[in-house]
Amino acid sequence: MTNRWVANWPSWLRLANAPPGSARPRTSELLIAYGSIRCAARGVATRNGRMTTVRISWDELAESPKKAEQLFDLLMHAEYGDRVRTINGSGGDGGRDAWIEDIRRAVEFKSWTKLGKSQRAQVVRSVKRAVGTETASWVLVAPVHPTPGDLQWFNSLKGRYRSSFEMVFRDVRWLELKLAERPDIARYMLTTPHQEVIDMQRELGQEQSGLVEGVPDLLKRLDVLRSRADELSPVWGLDFASRGGQNSVFVRLKPGSPPQRIEVYLDVVDDDPAGSAVTEAVATALHYGSGAVIEPGYINRVENEAITALNLPWEQVAMVMPDRRVTAGFPRAATLRARTVDGATGRPLHLTLHYATEGSLGMYVHGTDSTGMLRLRLRIDRPAPEQGSNVGMLLQYGPEDAQHAASVDPDALLRTVTVLDSLDQAPGMVLVLDTEQIDLDAQTREPTGHFAPIARTLQDFVFVRDELDVVLPMPTRWSRRDERNIAILAGLLRGDEVSMPLSTTVCHQISTAEEARLYVDLLETGHGGRIDFEMVGLTLPVGEVTVPVDPLYIAFSRARIINASEVAEALAAEAEFVPIDVGPARGSAVLGRRTPFPGPHPDGGPATSSV
Image (cartoon, rainbow, N blue to C red):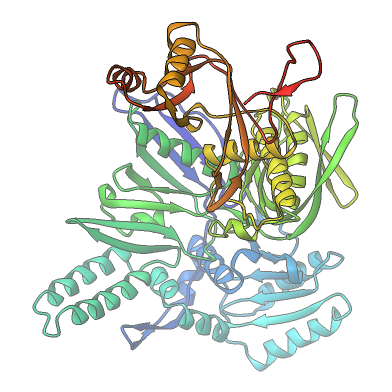
């Protein structure tokens, strides 16, 4: 089956299905948005430390709208990164081809090389459209060599609109300076990247002639070729890996690149678990902007003008899809509360939201709780009747994976887990941002049950630590043994009868021959019997700390002699002293107490201790 993903990257993404493909293995087609570009320029570029002049015929590029748009888009993103939003003016651009929200700057780009009467009239119309908007500064960018008359005219225009916003004119000198700073943009606009690759391969062949200085010489030459590769495209960066005779190229969007529309065809076989994982990762990256890496061997081909020109060997190519991170408006304080069916809300979980990633179906919002011990991923789906929202929580010892458990306050963690358990059990939640309340509902809601056991263990841990007054750091990783031992210690300290593990309760003693025969008659030839005894020197480990439990009284509801054959041999040999190991029989209950077990008085009187 052929799946087609259509996406605007980094805008909202959407998913559409294409008709089924041929009988070949399932192929996934990934489309990621691309903004068109135009341009023309002259700049100065640096190659391997040599200064290279790149001459751009502005008059020729002015006749190519697509090239002009490309150049403007690349320069704006090089200048402002993800802060800039370029605008398609076909439906009216409001006097701006680009908008930088945080400084409220509008940028209007024109590809003319002179400011005649017609061009000046267009500038005035654009300025008028920007009046009355939130614009704080309006910038005209055009490859014009301004005459004194041009500058006088523009200064007059600035004076006319100075009460509305600041006005700036960026002429051809500014454009050439920016292109000199970004030789990859200048080369991309004026040369064929495929020819650049051929030139690089030719240089690599020359480099193979000899390595006089050994490995340092090789590394130096590879650095030169790597820097050359980085100049091939202003949009796509290339990273190389070579291991075990296999060479790979990792393709990634350069920081601050304009949005790209691409089509990526993935060969994924239905019954290949690794291929299914790639498909799922790519889908999640598109749906929620989480990012993914498509490893070599899964990409069949890619359709994108900038990347096709590189003539890459796709069977050796990996693609890095960065997360589509949104940081504007973060960090932000919030609370999350459980909500019952009747609308009542529970205790708040105080959060700090750090950033979000967004995709076609919705977004992931990432945050931590007030203690820093809880990492939260809140999934908010775009409004749709059939979809709900999802809150995923990762409980760990700190905001960083490597943070050690010894730094954790168990009381604070217990409070957090208690609220998490209430959220887990609730049919809905309420997210509060400032004064705004957002209801989070899921169509199908089943409690995970993950947090209740953690809460019980933490309650026991805090109780044991405080009762014994010992330095008891939380284990780096909670094992089943740790959880069991904490539960046993807490129960014993509370004075409860506690179920003990069968493997740790064996009574060893040396008896006379007469006592040994009584043990055999009671425990081996009959139906077994209850036996109570006192153990000394017992310890229970919790993490790296060994906690003494002394004395400890143990009761078997049914006991047996573990070394019965050894006892029989000793009795047959008429030994004076016989070693006996007593343990619980199959199905026996094993209980422990810190005080002796009460036993019934023969006359029905007060209870006595049996040993």
